[in-house]
Amino acid sequence: MDGAPAMTVKPMIGQPTDGLFGLQPQVTKNGQFAHWMHNSILVPTITVISLFVLALLFWVSFRYRKARNPVASKTSHNTFIEIIWTLAPVVILVLIAVPSIGLLQAQFKPAPSGAVTLKAIGNQWYWTYQYPDNGGFEITANMLKEKADVAAGERPRTDADGPKLLATDNRIVLPVGVPIRLITTSNDVIHSWAVPAFWIKLDAIPGRLNETSFTIEKPGLYFGQCSELCGARHGYMPIAVEAVPPAEYAAWVKAKGGTMPTPGKASDKVIPQPGADGSAAKVEEAAETANATGPVENVTTTAPATTQGATSNPAGAGNAGQ
Image (cartoon, rainbow, N blue to C red; front, side, top):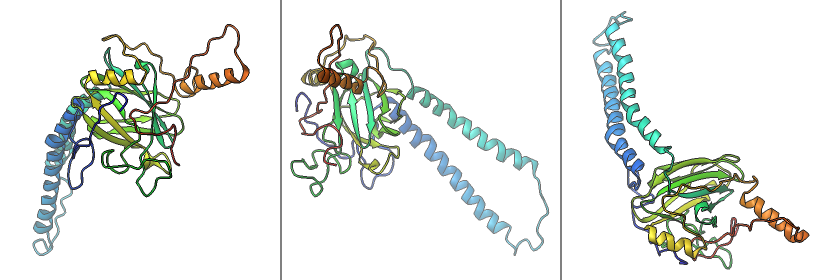
């Protein structure tokens, strides 16, 4: 697997499961807190309010039916009841807002020094990834098609690759227990990088860099997909992440021709937007121009980043086979 471990799919972990109700098992602190808040605060609150309103409807229908009230009451106001139905929702919302604001703040907390930077770039309809802190190598990930849909020479999806519509030809690899700085952007339209088990959903917007951070606590294989309507093949932009121990991550980076940064050192890499000077596309364009016109004296051109697969699954750049 050119440095990456042979991860296998585990039932009910990192993927949707038929017949189950609720959120996926969470493997980040924010996800675990959100899972607790959903199960212990939101669901009970919604259940109590719904049952209370339903009981009121039945009581009003029975108590104030025509048979018991041939002459309807002309009462139009009740100050006490009006105060109650105004204050009660306010109190409920304030109590819910306290943990909600804390969770929102934690989701956008800047990554600490020593975080691994992953830049996810949305394209119609596949993802490309860059590792700026590890030498800047690039990975392209396309959805694996079913056996009946592949063309000659293409590899179809198998159960070992992952669920239908979620398996990719190249998986990205991230270390466990190390903060991850996720940066998203797009080359065309708005996409959204979402992995439910990480409690992550971050929009990828053309001309803009969005950022969040998270730390994966358990090794495993986790799946996600684009969660912003982005065109005809929006449903065919899966995400597959292998979370591995730091030593295995370092071996994988080395196998990709990358380098490991100094431990604890803050990232000093410039993360350009797609199309900006210094971006992979501009560097490649400059290299092609130099090759066409010949060498120019006293000018240095940075070598373009190469697109490499994250695993040994054969695939080229772009939307393979489409």
